[in-house]
Image (cartoon, rainbow, N blue to C red; front, side):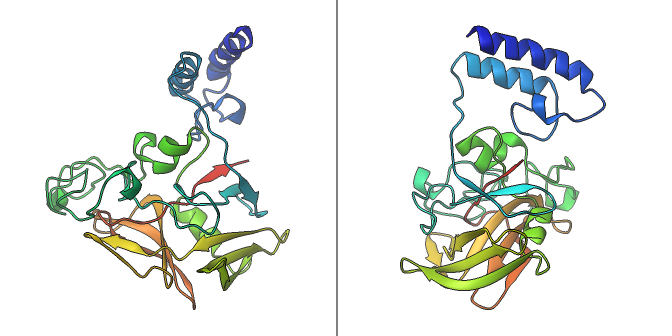
Length: 253
C-alpha cells in the first residue's frame, strides 16, 4: 500500500510536469493523455473498485507502436469468435443482449434519427460533436481494463496497409479468418470471420469478419467505422452503429 501511495504522489507531481507534454509514465488509465482522470483511476484501484486484467498481445512492428490483442473480447482462444457489441455499448450478446437494432440501441430513442450521444448533425439527434468513443463507452477499456482500447480508424488502416503487413485467408482449428503478418518482424495475429448480428440473427459467420473501431463516421452519425473482410480483401468502411460486431482490443507500447 505504501508503494501505491507513493505512486499516487508521483502521478500528482507528473500531472503538473506533463501539463503541456504527454508523458506515458503518468497515463495510468491508458486514455492517451495525462489528467485528473489518472489520479481518479489510481484512487479507485487503491480502493479495489477496479482490477487491471492481463491479456496477451502481439507487437507487429507497426510505425504507430500499436500492440494488437491475440483474441477478441469474450473469446477464450485466438480462433474463437468471442462476443458481439453494438457500437458504444459495453455489454454484448454474451451479456444478455439478443437483439441488435435501433429499438434496442443504448444511445438513441428508438430510431437512427434520435441519437442521444455521438452526433454532429441535428437531423440525427442531440448534437455533441463527439467523434470517438469515451472510455466509459469503449468495450475494450471497460471489459479489459486500463491500457486497452478499441482500435481507431487509423489503426485499422495501418493494420491493412500492404506495405506493412500481408493478409492471408486461412483456417485455424476449423475457423476461417484472416491472418495478418508483419513485414517488419514476422509476427502475426488471427482475426476470426465471426460474422455480424443484425436483429436477432447471426449472419456471415465463417465467411466474413466485422470488427468495430472506436471512430464515428465522418458522414451520417448513425454510422461508425469498422474493419470488414472476406476471403478476398479487407476493408475499412462505415455501417449502422446498432448492429453487433466483434471487438479486437489494442494498446500502445
